[in-house]
Length: 166
Image (cartoon, rainbow, N blue to C red; front, side, top):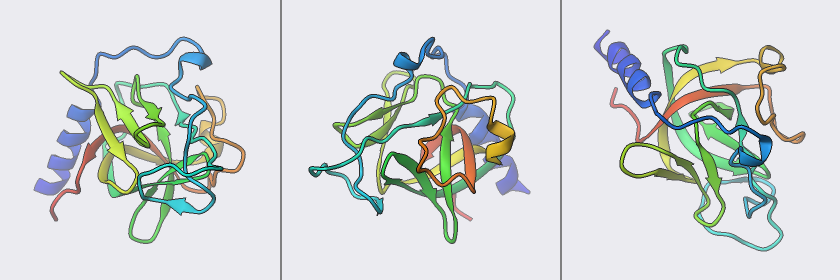
């Protein structure tokens, strides 16, 4: 019970931000920049012939499901995933102002006094909920790239480094 309350509190606290939503797709944080080669990549560093990571993004909602999941950030082509013990979730980012930092090969999330960066291979906890691609069809600010696996999607309202102790 205490772990569930802590997870809910973490998701609620990290989901709050004063950053504003982008007003156009060009402001979405999806820039043409270097990303992982074919196959899941969890290491940091750019190589030639890489395709750009393109964040699948949804509008931020102050009210969201209060579930958490933990795993490792990974990229496969233009898709950003959360790898859990036995599943892979496409991350649908619903954090205002979040962008992909191509030079650092990291998800950049605005917050407080400085931005937080989550590099590929970083263990993270995400607050939000699982969703189906059909349920999100009309909600996307930036839909996932055509080659992304949308069988399992995690709508991330918050992200923190590390995994909760269990």
